Length: 253
Image 1 (spheres, rainbow, N blue to C red):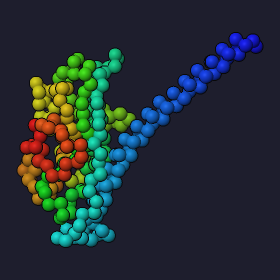
Image 2 (image 1 turned 120 degrees about the horizontal axis):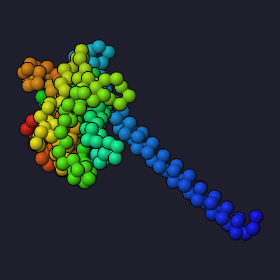
Image 3 (image 1 turned 60 degrees about the horizontal axis):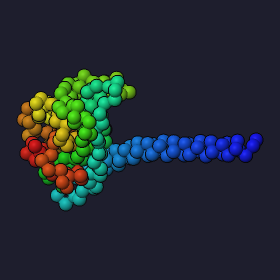
Image 4 (image 1 turned 135 degrees about the vertical axis):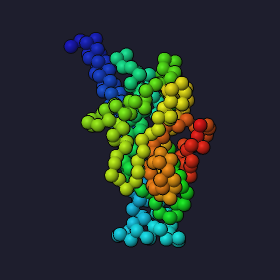
């Protein structure tokens, strides 16, 4: 091999090594993002499980209800930042609706799928508690081409979950639990011209109603219940932490 051929061979080797290293960083970076999301979800669920379990130690449920009982833990649920991108060429508006539906699914999953009652202990003496699950924005191209997203509520009702043979609605409204679970209200998805205004910032919110409170969406009866909401904030400054004491119908737009 002459000198020129050797130099070309060396150059090709350097290029291939560089491409391999870049590819590895992309793969590792993507995996890190996935694991980071999963880790935050597990962290949230574990903190709520600890709170739920602290009110019932070895069957002595009155321990958590004692006037002097201290709370064991508090929600540790980082807000997930979601920016919805413009659909690909082979996609349509349903791709945006699915992203919103997936944010609801992740919120319901990391808060225990309706199976946890973290604020049951007497020390939590408010009637309403909220956890901000995710902050949703839309990129500029989506805002331009899809200023209003219609039919997201219907998508939750009929859209089939990825990898599961059930609709998002079926997943978000389980029955036969110790806590009543209500599906997201239609009005959350029809606030602007019967749709979602993509210029606004929205939060997926886990709303907990204390057992002694009257529950409007359950016919006014008293009892512990949860409901997921999709709400734009009047002012999102200082809101990137769980807001425990809340009244969604008056606090939000």
